[in-house]
Length: 103
Image (cartoon, rainbow, N blue to C red):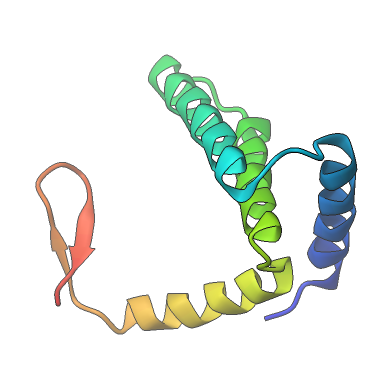
């Protein structure tokens, strides 16, 4: 799995982020990601469908990974591997709308 357009865009975004937010860290990017996820949750509760909020959260997650030395390319390859791993697992419903794989 390799999407050069996404990887190129993420490379530009990461370079911009490092220049614009020089003191940010992998951990601080996750703090920001949690804020963005909270905004998404509020939107869901209010019936607002805003893909830009999802994009913000994804950018923060990629920012954290990049600042931790993990490239977008590595994440996309891991995404593919993890997807195929997950479809081979058995899953249980946890009763709260979430699921966990059986160990």
